[in-house]
Structure formats: structure tokens, C-alpha cells
Length: 326
Image (cartoon, rainbow, N blue to C red; front, top):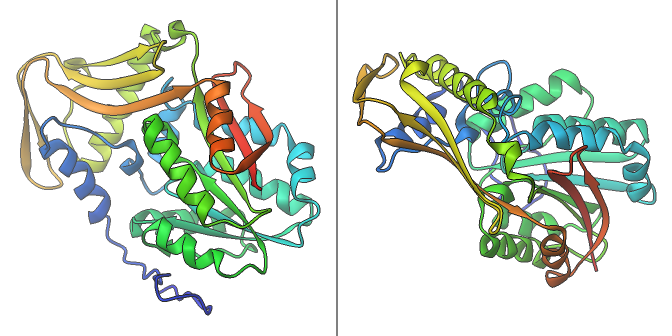
């Protein structure tokens, strides 16, 4: 059992580790039982690494995980400069962040002798257990306080203790539309004090030809099918599905799905059930909103932040933005 020892409000729910993987499996199965079917890649996670990260190695949809990690690690001096005057900071992670990006950021803070602690927040206790283990394996000396619950409630309580600067790492914007993104940024801003930070990630509007590569689509399909078969003990046949993406350069909306090429039944041994698919039935994977530089700047200014640093990947498809509360 992990006990959270501090004097915060009761809303900071202590995490009690259970060794079950039922939460993760049930969330995936819920998507298959829904109409229309969908897969949340955040729930693709095995004992060795996040399958979301694994999927990102080949997916044009999710390659921001690796490009953001590279952008962070390649700009160590610029990031160090942001926090050199802070005596202590608390990294507040919202949602299922990219572990690679966070590892890069932790490495920079440690090398710069900046005092910090990390507080990942998630509704998923399974994810928090995995995440805590993963971080401690690489960074056994860092202070980690995993918090299970609603991030708005928890962030409100954390902000009441102003003994150190907050740095909120926000990652879920890619799957949100503009209104949802603006609302989230505003809600976070309301709970921060002047001088606090938010580090937020965006996918950028880009050349649509980057997203229509047949070889990449096949690799995405195979990686996704392999993860589903491993997690659900299924017999998905990659030859009976196609991976399809649709991107509108004007709106910046990208949608991806798996499509069944024939009527078929897939057996899932983990629950001893069969899932039926119609011919050309779509399984939604993700809906991603991409932005241009002006839209991103407006998000910051409208919510009371000043953009301090923006890091881009090598082909400017993704960015990591550091904003400071006025």
C-alpha cells in the first residue's frame, strides 16, 4: 500500500495499489461494446512500457510523444534558464502524460540541481501504479506523490499551498476541440498564482501528405492489432482490417480508425466472449485537433498567461509550450 503523507485536503485521495489489470481491460472492452466502437489508446498499456508510446513509434497521429521528448532534451539550457530562480517547484501532471517527455524534463531538473517533486494526477489507479513504478525504476531518488481523482479538485487544493511554484504539465489537448482546450486552459489558470507555470503540448497544422503514407498506415495497424491481441488475448487478424486516417488542412481536424474489411467475429479469451464486426464497420481510434501558431498564442493570452518558451520538433509538426501566469 502506498500512503500519501501530507496535510493537504481530503480531496487528495491516497492511492491504494491493487495488482489487478481489470480497469485497463474493462475500459478497452467498453469501447468495443459501444456503438460506434472505439479504442482509447491511453488504455493500451502493458507491463513493460506504455503501448501508447509504442504505438507512437510508427503512428503519424501520435508521433508527438517522441518528437516532444526530443524537443525537450535538445533544449536543456533554455529550460534550465526558465527555472533557475525557483527555490523549489512541483511538477503537476494531468492525465496520461508522455513518459519520455517527463523523463527528459526530470533529467534536466536533476542536472541543474533544481529542487522539485512530481505529482501525477489521474482517474486511473492502474495507470498511476504503472507510472510510479516506471519513474522510480529510472529515478529512485525523486519524490513522487501519485494522486487519484479529478484534476480540477486536486489542483485547487494544491494551489492553496503556495510554498513552491507549480508547473502544470497538461497533455490531453490533442483530443479536444478548440472550445474544450480553451476551457481547460482557463480552468487551470484560475487555480494558479502569478509566477506559476503551465507546460502544454499541441499538434500543429501540417502538410497533409505526411499523414497519408501507406507504409506507415500498415505499421500503425500491425502495432495496434498486436497490442489488442496481447492485452485481450484476442485473435484479431491484421489482414482483415485497414488503418484509415482523414485530415482536413483547413480545420486542422484529424480522425483515424480501423475498418473491418469483411463480416467477422473476433474471440477475446480474456473474457471468453466473441465480438462481431460488420463489413466496413469503423472502430474509431482518435480524433485529433491541430492548431497554428496564432491560435496557440491566443489560448495563452486569453487565459492570462505569457508565452515564455516554445519548442518545436524537427519538422514543426508538434510543439511544447511553456507559459507563465501573469
